[in-house]
Image 1 (cartoon, rainbow, N blue to C red):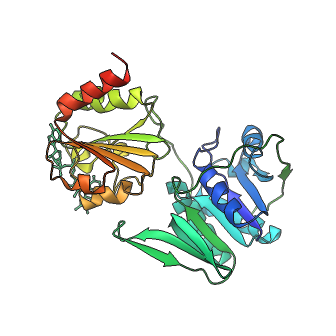
Image 2 (image 1 turned 90 degrees about the vertical axis):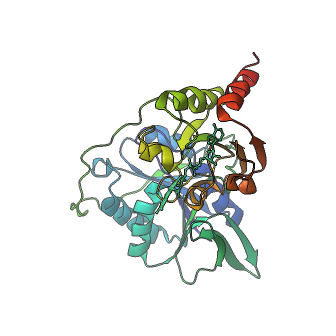
Length: 317
Ligand SMILES: Cc1cc2nc3c(=O)[nH]c(=O)nc-3n(C[C@H](O)[C@H](O)[C@H](O)COP(=O)(O)OP(=O)(O)OC[C@H]3O[C@@H](n4cnc5c(N)ncnc54)[C@H](O)[C@@H]3O)c2cc1C
């Protein structure tokens, strides 16, 4: 099945999560092509071409990732190329742009896919629903299929020894909608990776009494592990951390290889944002805390004692 993988980028580099979308697409078809759109894409095209042939629409009119414009170009190119399946990694970008492209294309969409199987030629997709309380199995009727996959659910393929071809394609950028203009993008402060992209996330909850404690313990452990920091909503509501760190139903949804929950009780709204992590480890002074039910590893203890000990051990001191 002819498949386009939408490659997300931040204007200067590809997002690491794209690997999951390519990995998923390749499991289902040999006819997979990466698709980039934006401006000044040369370096990113070359990066993408390590994993699949690339088609690219490079135009100043697409400098900002504004949903109505990008979705129109995605739909136009997908139609022109006869794409039967369009795949992206499940991110805020995808929720904004890919869903709109799906609407324009009129196909069948499944989002946040965490697994699949093919039975008698029929593709069955598994995705969490109701804040992760249940898993649904979906089949898609009609074409094209538009599918977003969770970053932790699929492995990125190994880069090819010889890069694939890069093909610039034309799109009608003169009649794009202009009702939305991007005014400003607020940059992330700090050198830590973004919570949605990191392989390891260290998250803190109400156990931490001040911003300084959070930075020293949660931030300290994150830096030791080259990880991102996250938090429960309790700390955001208390003004201890910015809301960009909040993980959960009304925060960010993450699925890293390792999620460390420090002093977090495991409320259903927090679990909705992290329970698809590959490995979950928790430290909580309450041995009956619900988070332990969802953890692969648990330590009953005080974060103010256990986290400094962990940092010291990891640093070999
Ligand atoms: C509509 C709605 C949406 C929501 N969205 C979100 C969301 O997106 N994300 C989110 O996180 N929450 C969300 N919430 C809030 C959620 O219900 C919980 O209140 C919140 O997750 C609790 O955060 P917490 O686990 O840090 O705090 P608590 O539930 O208070 O738990 C603190 C934990 O820390 C442990 N502890 C305390 N001191 C120590 C110590 N010194 N050492 C070790 N352990 C210690 C305690 O035993 C306890 O288990 C939402 C709620 C609503 C109603």
